[in-house]
Length: 218
Length: 183
Ligand SMILES: Cc1cc2nc3c(=O)[nH]c(=O)nc-3n(C[C@H](O)[C@H](O)[C@H](O)COP(=O)(O)O)c2cc1C
Image (cartoon, rainbow over the protein chains, first blue to last red):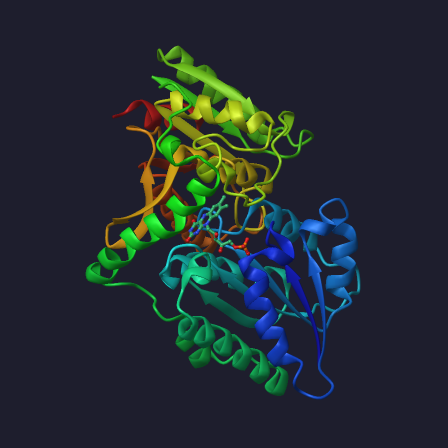
């Protein structure tokens, strides 16, 4: 089976989407005969027509992106918009999506997911499903056993996709956990993220004292 | 009131939305508002690169030196911001989405609970209310409207403000002006 993975993260191969993608693709390639090409929207920004050609030459496509203000980044919308209408006489590949976001709950991604399914219908493609996962930014600060669980989850989604050509709804739901957090879980998590993630990053850049700057007058 | 209208129509040859916005601007000015119109396709606003410079290097200011820097100031100075776009494949134009993505410097990276979910802290005391003005495309159906309305409601929570209205350009401009003027 042939797959083209189109990664729409503005951070390209260094981003969190790439980390999800890599594990998924590793699992996918375990099936004999499976082949996968990876493309980056950011690299094709001045040549979206070229990326459109690659899209329509594919059998299966998964488009991955980080959640930006509750939807796809503007640069990914540019790409989605060039795909419609399909070139005359072109076969439309089966289409799925992968998205992750900074906030820990996968629930944030469910709204854009509905859009993506409708978009796939507009395109006239058959919908493979959407791999959705919250907590993509905090990955590097999580304990190893959680990172392993995360990476193994993607690996097995990819492996099963290679074997069956489908993304199973129950598998996707299981991988998406947690959909929401309890107030207690949120209360426990936030101070940790604010000090261990954001404060550390600001300190590295000598910006912590300016954290609450308001450069614009109101 | 100070009103900022962001015109997200990418296509200068399709004057439908531009003409509508011009009329809306006139209506708003005639009812005593200070209405400012920005045509995004005439500005240089590159897509966000996800560098987080606006949060961890120069807190509150984007690291990409283009027109988005000044636009954030105008956004914050307004009482109401109207985001106007044609629906393009069921969502707003990439032109307007890029401008919205570039506006995250106005919030703070810290997380806090908002209505039982994780969101970001405010950087400023107040933010403009948001009005959404959309132009239908021939394929627009009820499902599209539901999806896009929900996406905007979510966006508004993340921008730490409130949705004043969501209207379509099939409604006459004076009625939309009225929706802006009521408190
Ligand atoms: C402009 C911008 C907007 C974002 N909006 C959201 C959002 O609405 N919800 C969320 O959970 N995370 C949001 N994030 C966080 C990203 O989704 C998160 O950092 C993601 O892991 C980045 O993936 P990448 O490294 O593949 O680009 C936003 C990040 C940026 C830069």
